[in-house]
Length: 428
Image (cartoon, rainbow, N blue to C red; front, side):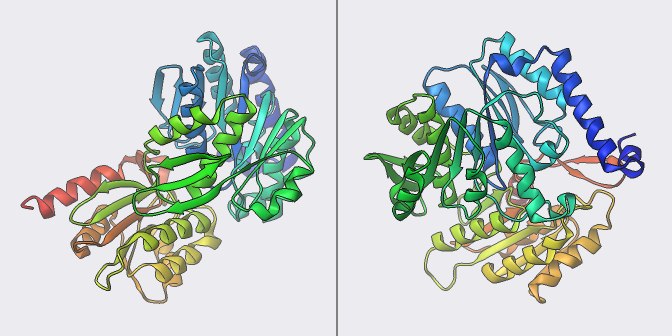
């Protein structure tokens, strides 16, 4: 039915159809978001980690929260894995979720908000009090028609949110989001020289003295030192976004520090699955921007020995969308990785070999092409020597591989890594 509607209905009719569904969902469940402090987090990368950090801080502050993101649905102490393969579920699901949150006496609800969700009016009739922008880079270009339209979709969350806007002041697109009015604006940055620009419009959360090594990241905010057990400079930005939200709600930096220093990371996001004799990292990165940050982080943390290698298993990009980025992902892998294996990811109704070839074309002959994802992971583990790093990207903790005919094959990169590692190195 959905495919029929997409194929034969004009865009304006399809848009109205989605709008009506959003209204009906809110009406049936009694507009529950009006009884919550609703926080929407959008951006190209970092949304899930940021929502999880916000949730951790609020819970440490003794607040009861509801959380809806690409990994899980949580209301108070009850939670379940997000098996829908949708970061922002349908309108009726969201409204029902928020209704349950109200019934369980939650104070806050924290939602990931996607451009596709906004395009389909899933943000409508949700009374967002706070909108957060993590960052913005080209993504979903084919679905929206251009980067400008993609950015415009993100902007609609800020257009609809009138209370608090929280923006990444170091993102080159932040001025576009600055134009939307709000009662309060907060900017987070690592660049002290930009503070005068921000001070004119709102409060600034500045991170100083940031450091990154193989053990984690550290920085200071207003002389409060944060030491996080997470890798990657990008996680400093995610933490700053969460701190900004907390500060807007009167939560102290002392509580933020305690919560974030206890934060163990997000499943499938820079998750270290194997530590010795080499490291194996599983990460969700499937956009060029995210993938490059993962590679930069890992290459900077590999011990400076000529024998140490970065071995990359590159997910071959979901079928049916964003074909433009396939060779770009391949090129990034070739630039940063010593060994590149391009494999299957979520082909949907596309020929998986064709997708693999398109990704591999960007590597200029450097890639090995292995269709079976398990076999690709096994090969990467065989190649690895002591001190090397194997990174497997594209799926993170996703519980399935999506293939033709709408079928889903149960899957978990982390589980497969452990199984194949045990087969090869069980005698170690």
